[in-house]
Length: 433
Image (tube, rainbow, N blue to C red):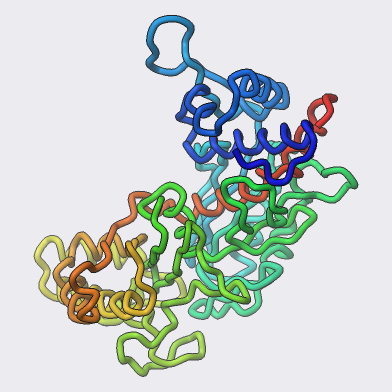
């Protein structure tokens, strides 16, 4: 059992509290205490003490397992009814959604609302809703994770080229109060990257957030990729490639469960690579971007329908339905979208050598309804040495929830540290942390 340099019994116990909480979260609060004890290589007595401490601190609550053999019922540790909450938000080009998430990943949708496509129209009302939820839940809110459909720079500055959003200061527009109880010294811990405590995910969250309880703002594709690595088709995959298709598309390489953010944190932009031979100018400033040929905007543009500005999702869904009903023109537009997707995927596979390529958003629909148009250029574009064992193309099993789930994971990554858990316990118990 790794101790992460703990030198005293108190440090070791604090380390093991975090390991146990992380294990409960990662398994979706489905494993029994005895199974967790074995997996974490803890003594039974140690596990009992840890569970009792965490229950007293409103971090865990146990329920009898649904099925058990003879004797005393087996207990399953899960979220405490008064335990920590992550508020996860997905801000798309046309609407946003807010969910309340507990340890283990259970999510409750709080509100879904359309917006007008402007930063003020999107984040102003969203900030009001989030402040209301923070007031309602109080110090139970340990962080806000927010996914947006564009590059995110340090400090939560967002650019969404096709909405003409440039250097939008999301934290300032949201105007949230400090989140979570302050740790020793008074500085709010949540929203800052983990400080290296030896837990399962000893990496910074997949988002940009400052100290003092600022929201963690991240790219939607990067968050969706994080969700696939934790709870989806990329779980246990050493090298994966995730692509999210919506109005256009984004993509990111995932290595050992971690989306690679790049030197400046804005690496999930495969959609702005010239992978298909096009030369048209893109709103991002480049030419020939792959995203000009894949996604809702490309689909509607090919059919001569109104598109852009974060509008047209309903029309695109009707095109998918028309193609399935036998409409030849809709089917041709869908096939063109899928061919462009397959061509670009082949180029990325040649470059990155992933084991699995996962698709989310409308990528799932393209995979299901235009598979031949997708796989033919994909196969043709692969190097000969890759055709013998090509990577698997896998549709997400998380639906459109990936960005929300990734936003939640980023918040709990920041909270589930020795410092974060100690701060929570100090605020709720008089016991030494």
